[in-house]
Image (cartoon, rainbow, N blue to C red; front, side):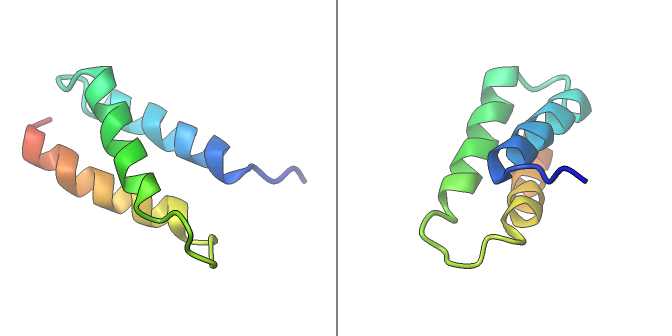
Length: 66
């Protein structure tokens, strides 16, 4: 079984959220996901970073509207 890199998972999150928030510009969604991902730089345990990034990005994007 192939395991995805953290960046590949973050890219999938960006794609998923871009589809979910079609009214929000792609650049905005990408920036939100990137900014949330950067917040976890330097953290030693990486297993749950994509999940946390997605949750934090969802919270911020929901404020911008669906």
